[in-house]
Structure formats: structure tokens, C-alpha cells
Image (tube, rainbow, N blue to C red; front, side, top):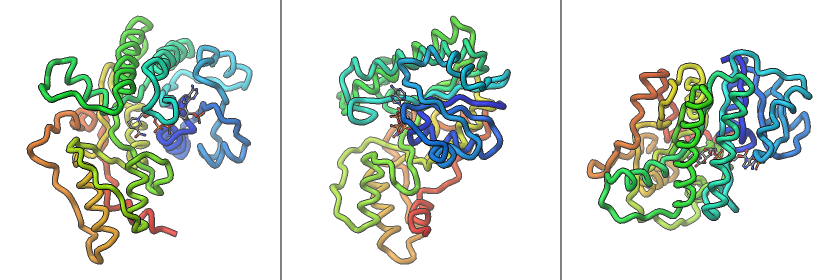
Length: 307
Ligand SMILES: NC(=O)c1ccc[n+]([C@@H]2O[C@H](COP(=O)([O-])OP(=O)(O)OC[C@H]3O[C@@H](n4cnc5c(N)ncnc54)[C@H](OP(=O)(O)O)[C@@H]3O)[C@@H](O)[C@H]2O)c1
């Protein structure tokens, strides 16, 4: 991989991947809708990075834009697709609003092929795996999700992209994340906001949900995507995680101990044995790319306290 095109590069995951790739000498073209100054571009994506303001509705016109800006994907360019939106946040909105993202992803894939990219890497979510258990008849649990439209649209995105990649003859790699987290907790998901409250001693509501999550720090996520760009296999579906899932209550309690109890640097949690961890399998990713998450949840506090 000598070059990369990244949609959703102004977001949490896309920006981290753009910065990481740029820092190791890969030529990156970042895409987003914001109007950014050249200072913003260097600060956000790394020195020397290029940026194009382009809505996903226009993604089919990317080749023309690239020509105008005198950039070329060359013959070893990987396309990373992170653009996604709900109505107010990533996961909300009607089914139609969510499904529009799946249509854009498929258009992006066609565009990647047109540009001669060697691989298309799409971002999915653990939520789609949860929903898929019902489709596959693998669970008798009652269906409960606050993100049904998001999860269904993500499944549609994966399957449409897989099929179109096969028809267009371009390698397609699917990825899934549970909870990527910026160490400064700036991007406001529920988990980030709650951890921030805990770090500031502000009371929070203890989650009762027994679902497992896998919090992974964003630097690890960026490194994983780089390795997938290098050696991720066609048609693979990689879960990018730490292989140590826990309930949110466990994460929050461990973090509370880290924050409040002197000498609690080793505060930790154990994945509950009675819960199904099969969706969090990271061995395939490790086998194909060598990726292992190295940043411990405990590092979060150190990063937060860094001046
Ligand atoms: N964050 C999580 O907890 C999480 C968990 C699992 C999976 N994921 C998946 O990972 C991917 C990246 O997530 P994220 O957390 O980085 O999301 P994010 O911070 O909300 O960023 C979304 C990005 O998509 C861009 N975008 C949205 N709609 C667009 C459109 N119509 N045209 C052009 N750009 C558009 C946004 O650009 P603007 O700046 O122009 O809005 C932004 O750069 C998504 O596919 C998400 O579903 C995230």
C-alpha cells in the first residue's frame, strides 16, 4: 500500500487512520464535507496529507475531482470507507436515513474500482453481528436494540458491498468495531462521556445492560486498519478488538477504581464466563495481519492526565 483514500476522514476513526498512515509515509487523500484550511488539514491528517471536500452523494465523481487536484491513486492504493451518519449521531435516524449510507458505501466501492484501487476496506459494527444472530436463528433471546436501523443498514452495506465487489472484481475486506475510543475522550459517544464524568468525579447512572462491549483505543484501531490495508484478505470479516470484552458496568467500575483508589493501577475486569464471546474473535485478524491490541484500558487514565 503506497497510497490511501479515506472517506469519513474528519471523524473519530477516519482521522486516526489518516494520521497514522501519513505518519508512516503513505500518501493519503482524506475526504469529508467540512471546509478546511491548509492548517486544519495538516493538523488533522498530518503534514503533507491532501484533503478533498466531497459529500458521499457525489462520491461517484471522485475520479474527476482527483484529476482536477492533480493527485493520482497510483497502482497500490487502498480505499478505506468510514463515512456514515444518522440524523443527530452515527446510530440514530430512520431506516431510510441509515440505509442511504449503505447505498453510498456501494457507490464508494464502485468508485474505488474505477480509480484502480487494489482493495476496499469497509467499516461495520458489532451491532450488525448482534442483529445477524437473529437472522441466522442462532439465538432465542428476545430482540432488544436501540440501534436496529443502524445495525440493519450496516448489514445491508456489508452484503451489497460484498456482492458488488465480486461483480466489479475488487478485493473487499469487511471490519467490525465495538467501541473505539479517543484517549482524550473528546468524541462524545455515551462511553466517552461517562468515562469523562468518572474522571471528573461527576456521578453517573450505572448501566444495567449485560451486553458485552470491547473498548479499544483509537491508536490501536488505526494500526489495525493499516495492517488490514497491507495484508487483510479478500472477503474477510475482521473484528478489531482487544479480545477482552466486558460489560459497560465492569469497564466503568474498573475506571472508577483507577481514578479514585491510589495504587489501583492494576484495576481490571474479567470477561464474564456466562456470556457469549464468539462475536469478539480476534484470532483471524491476528493470523492474517499480525495485529494485537497493545494499549490497555488502564493507559486511558495516564493519557488523560498527560499535560
Ligand atoms: N464510533 C463508534 O463507536 C463506532 C463503533 C463501531 C463502528 N463504527 C463505524 O466506524 C465508522 C467511523 O465511525 P466514526 O466514529 O469515526 O464516525 P464519526 O466520528 O461520526 O465520523 C463520521 C464521518 O463520516 C463523514 N460523513 C458522514 N456522512 C457523510 C456524507 N453524507 N458525506 C461525506 N461524509 C460523510 C463525516 O464527515 P463530516 O465531518 O462532514 O460530518 C465524518 O468524517 C462508521 O462506519 C461507524 O459506523 C463506529
